[in-house]
Amino acid sequence: MSLSVENVAGYILNKGLFMYGKHFASTYMGSMVGSGVYVFAVWGYVIANTIKGRVELNSTLLATILGCKKEQIIKAIEHLCSPDPKSRNKDNDGIRLIKEGEYQYFVTGYEKYHNILNEDERREYNKIKQQEYRKKTSVKEDVNDSQ
Image 1 (cartoon, rainbow, N blue to C red):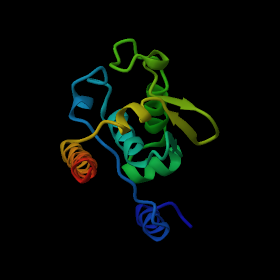
Image 2: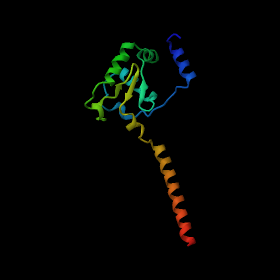
Image 3: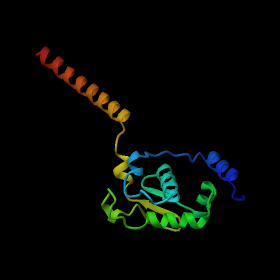
Image 4: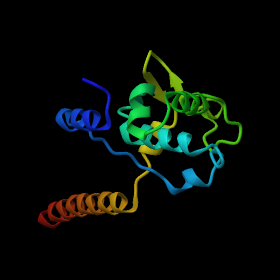
């Protein structure tokens, strides 16, 4: 298979590899400001494709997907693997990615940001917990009334 955008898109569609991630607005106001479009593009790809804290980054594939040179992707990945003393996430000295294999990276802030509930999720969670509480409370009241 030649590496064209069409072939890559077809591969992704056929394998059902579409993922999603929580992309926070604060990304554009923190310590990454001024890092360049390739860093933000790679970081967006990381957010969308991370599974259980791991992401596969193939610079040749990413260059094809993002329509740029492989060297630009390599430089962006290196930036994301570097310490960032101004990062909001102080774990691992602000490093966002840790290389684990040829293409595999550990996303250091995955668990922290993945667990942040959005407003709809928070409402749904509270609704379910309130229903559980009411159910448990009504059962206790029924038991007490019968005695």
